Image (cartoon, rainbow, N blue to C red; front, side):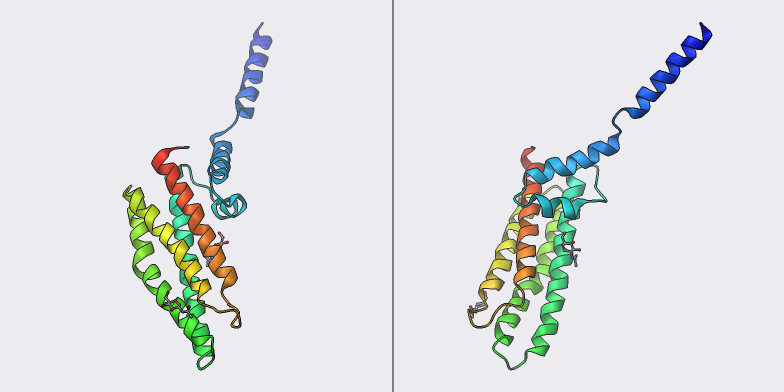
Amino acid sequence: MRTSVSSLSILLYILLLSAPLPLTQCGDLVGQICKKTPFYDLCVLSLQPNSGTDVKTLASKMANLVLSNVTDTLNFIQGLVKQETGTSLERPLADCAELYIPVVKYNLPQAIDALIRGRYGFADYVFSDVSKQADACEKNFSGEDESPLTDRNKLISNLCDVAVAIINILQKGF
Ligand SMILES: *[C@@H]1O[C@H](CO)[C@@H](O)[C@H](O)[C@H]1NC(C)=O
Ligand SMILES: *[C@@H]1O[C@H](CO)[C@@H](O)[C@H](O)[C@H]1NC(C)=O
């Protein structure tokens, strides 16, 4: 009798151990969220492996990723502007820098702050706008002057669209 009780408790223990852990649910949350965004693969790539435990944390992570991408691109543009001085690329590059400077300095930091404070409408507005700014920068290059920023602008625009979709989940639920 004693042996059977203890083997039963061992069996129970094993069953408990093999039950889904909260960790698995974290992974599911990223998948669940990313399915609601227009760029699933980019979303998953951006939010893993260090996945957060709730939608708001993941939204903040995406928002900060947008900021670091735009900051990196602005630095890249400012380097190119010096390199291309006097060429036909100088003007559109300078226009893009002018466009991205306030985004890095004010708009995105304000949007990230708004996100933390639960002012989702404002955050939503800013990320939608930055997505449009990236498109506007790209359009600044005419046919002959091929844009050296195409991949970066597209990535920024897509990251913003993912951020907007996640903020929408915060506002409206799944
Ligand atoms: C830009 O975003 C991509 C995709 O999430 C990420 O892999 C990359 O590290 C980011 N770049 C910077 C400079 O933050
Ligand atoms: C580039 O963008 C700026 C600001 O959006 C605009 O004023 C300018 O006319 C554009 N230049 C070209 C060549 O499209």
